[in-house]
Amino acid sequence: MQDISSAIESIRQRLGSRLCIMGHHYESDDVVEHCDVTGDSLELARRIPSIDAEFIVFCGVSFMGESAALLAKPGQAVILPEPAADCQMARMAAAADARRVLEQMRTLGLDVLPLAYVNTDVPLKAVVGEFGGSVCTSANARTMMEWAFNAAERVLFIPDMHLGRNTARELGIPEEEWHILELGPAGIANPQAQPLGRKLLLWPGYCPVHAAYAPAHIEAARSAWPGCRITVHPEASPEVVSLCDAAGSTSFLIKDAEANARRGAGAAIVVGTEINLVHRLAKRSPSATIVPLVDGEAAACPDMAMVTQEKLLRALESIEAGTWTKVVLSEADREPARLSLTRMLKICG
Ligand code: SF4
Image 1 (spheres, rainbow, N blue to C red):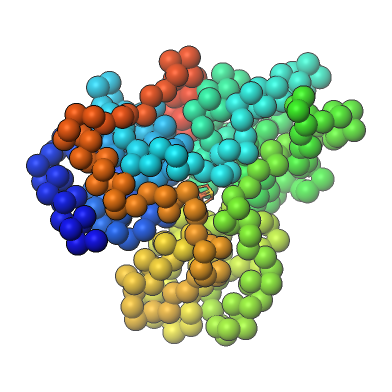
Image 2 (image 1 turned 45 degrees about the vertical axis):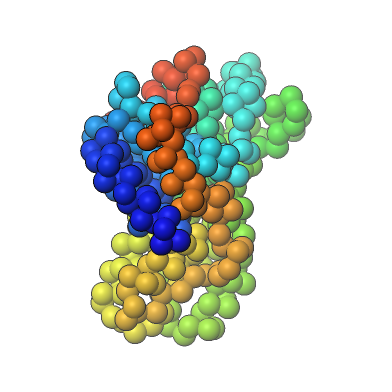
C-alpha cells in the first residue's frame, strides 16, 4: 500500500493546482488521506463552484460525480476512479418512472411538486427541475420540504421514504397526511385505490445500509453501553430514529460525536451510519468511546467500497497519460438538472 500511496502523492505533487481530489466521508481512510476536500454530499456540492483545478477526481459514487460535473466550470473534467460505483438508493428511482408518476398526477388534476434527495442520477434531477422541483440533502431536507410546501399543495419526495417520513415528522405533518406510493410498470399502481390526495407522497426507496438498522440494535446498544448517546442518520426508519438521542446528516453526526467526545462525558457515543466514517471518528478521538450502531460488512456501503487506493492511482495516472475519461452528461438533461441543484444551493446558501 505504501508504494501506491507514494505514487499517488508524487502525481499530486506533479499536477499541483491542476488537480483537486474530493472524497465523501464514507470512503476508506486510505482513500480519504489523499483527498484535498472531504465532506458529505452537501458540503462537496457547495465546494465545486470555488474549485479552479482543471481535473476534479471525485472519490464517491456516480451521482456525486454527476452533481460535480453539473456544477463544474466549462473546461473542468470530473473523473470518477470507479464509474461503476453507484448508489443503490439512487437506482430505485428511474427518471422515466418519476416522469410517469408526475404526469399521472397532473392528469388526475393533483398539484404536486417533486423534491428529490441528492442521491439520484442526473436524468431524475432533470425531471425534477423540469417539473419545478428541487434537490435536497439530509442536512437541508427540512428547509427544502418547507419551501416545497410553500410552493405547492402536495410534495412528492423521491426516493428515500425514510428521510421523507423523518422530515415530515420534524415538520409536524401527521402520518395520516403521508402515503408511500405503490408503483407498477405503468407508474402509480391502481391510482383509484391509493390516497393520492395526501399532502406528502413518498417514493418507496431506501438506503439498504441505513434502513437495515432496527429497534433491536438500539436496545442492544443501550444494554451494551449503559448511559450511551445514540445518534443516527435520518435514512434510518422513523421507528429507529425515535429511539435515538438525535438524528441528522453526516456532518451533524460528525460534529455531534466530536463535541461529545471533547466534553468527555465518559459514556459511549454510538453512531448509526456508514462504518468507514464511524471508525474514523473513533480514531480521531482516541480518549472517547465512539462505536458503530452496527459493525462489520452490513454497515458498509458496498459501492463506496469499490473506490480503492489502486483505482485512485489509476485515475491519476490516466490524467498524466492523457487517457482520462470524464463524466459526460446528456445535454438535454444538463440545464433542468442544474436548475434543480442550484435551486437548493440558492435557498440554503
Ligand atoms: S450508503 Fe446508502 S445512500 Fe449512501 S451511497 Fe451507499 S447506498 Fe447510497
